[in-house]
Length: 308
Image (cartoon, rainbow, N blue to C red; front, side, top):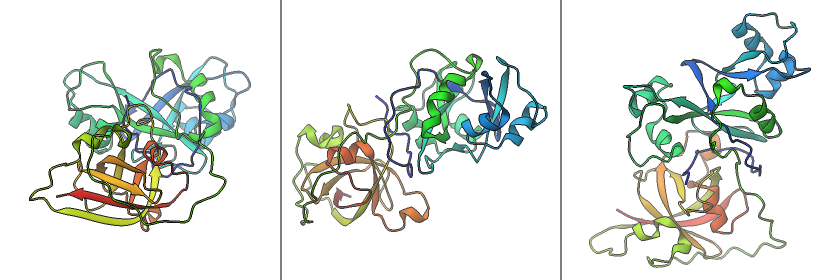
């Protein structure tokens, strides 16, 4: 159902689906915030730790003393800024990403929303929201970025989010990667991957039928190198696999073959983010794609083929 949140450098973890609410972001970019309802024994310090932000900005935004006593049930504003907010899917080790939503207003379109919220890439917004086009409706809830929090804090955050900033309909899946798969007891020696011909075998994923079968007058491109993963909430059931790869036109369907000779077909979303972790990798694939290849390593060798 969902495609990819493009969560790129997060530690691989497994969570239950704890988000049944959609967290609505408020304010005007870059001065965004979400609302939290104070619980018993909470202080600015532990609320700050909960939301991955220092207590001082919370105090300043709400206009009270950093050491003041909070009233149980009081709704306070939690700043959403560069310390706890991402629009490129990056987060630290042990962190998870919780989607933040904007409620579409009359007259707004997807491009305007992407520009208003920090000029976030519109293709990211489409993918986060499983949109096949740019048609949106007033009152529709659109993901515009993600809150970065510690894995163990995610459940507490969903409990503490103020009702005025949420809905009770089905929320976005907060679970990150699927790491219930076990590490193999022994690792086979690397072998040269075998590039297979195009087929309609859906074990290679949803996009296998879009991989060219008629290659007349088309140039085949082959590349080999190391691959890594990014986190995703999609692909586990619909088999829609995605990759980030440089020098390949977004939308291109590529076939990826691992050293165990398993293959998948995936769609290129865009280029790799400009970060040091990506200097040595050929591509990053969605975690669902890595699972389909029976890959559990953080970095692994692949052969890639596509047609121009």
